[in-house]
Image 1 (cartoon, rainbow, N blue to C red):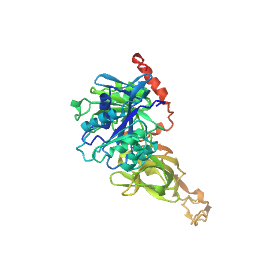
Image 2: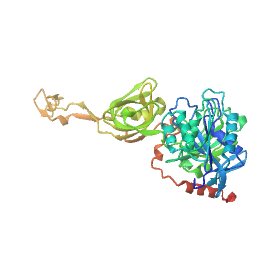
Image 3: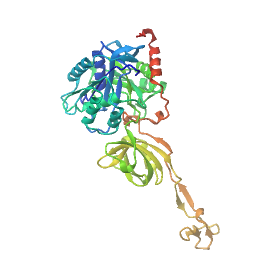
Length: 461
């Protein structure tokens, strides 16, 4: 941010299915570097959700440190001590940042896990944004990420095969076109692995009181989407478009006492992983957005999964709406040949198909079927067809009737517009339909607003 550049630190791939969390390591890093100033919001960047070796949410972290300039603002709290950040800052000693950060990863990452391969990147310049867009939409080689870091004079630290360098480089390179925020509260060490205590009713109230938040809970299934099920350090995370609302909302959630919290700038709920594609160009493990017409109606298979065929005029592909998609399957079942649909989803390799994340039904032509031949107005008997397109004729008295005199019934069609799965089935990058028309505030304006929330402790530099 601004003309003065800080020192950037990124890291990725430090957790495992058994615990740890890369966002939690961000709070430990902030603790480690209390002798430097945090610059801007900590960044939580999700990458391609179709990567086969991801542990959980495929998240990388980028922090910026330096000598802060401007009015500080609160972005967290650790062990009862407030964590502040500054809008701008001068760079600090990059070599020292790198050595200390690498030691922190060595100490806290789950290195015993086969799929945990951390990477650390420190740089005074950001890599090209192109590396972010490729990493969020494709599976890219490690050499490509290393080349992007080398091009800006950055320093790389690798553990094991070092695959985490890809996420580290991509998170540092991210220049938001769209962005959201998340405030994450963490558990004390002695509570990790035990059942979480988060009150459903208080989260329900937060969801109603702060419409700028999203993906908080699923009322129908009473699923708390803000609380993970894994044995990681996260207690809960609230996502939204207003960091001011998130700071207030966090205090209203009734739960076990958190040990710390941190406010992140994120690419979550942006659909950054989706590429607009023709069916002929689809590649496995891509996130895609395709438009076409239904060429074969939906059918169910055991397990409640629904499949239909989509055509864009030259090619066809099977679209799969799986059982966790809930009521969105009903919309898929109601689709008829010729209905226009925009599909958002991910391409599966075997079998080759598009797993539907959400769909926008664009056009549903009237579809009707004949249910009854007309009755003869003279003798009251059902008339018979007189031949294709020629109408009807009564076999008893010879009376004739036009083809449109038959009785027709309109078949049920899904309503045009958005059809989405329940909150519990949405990925981190999933953009809810409610966000498509959101007006993005300038980041400077947001920072100023957060500064005013904490005006009693403002420090100018």
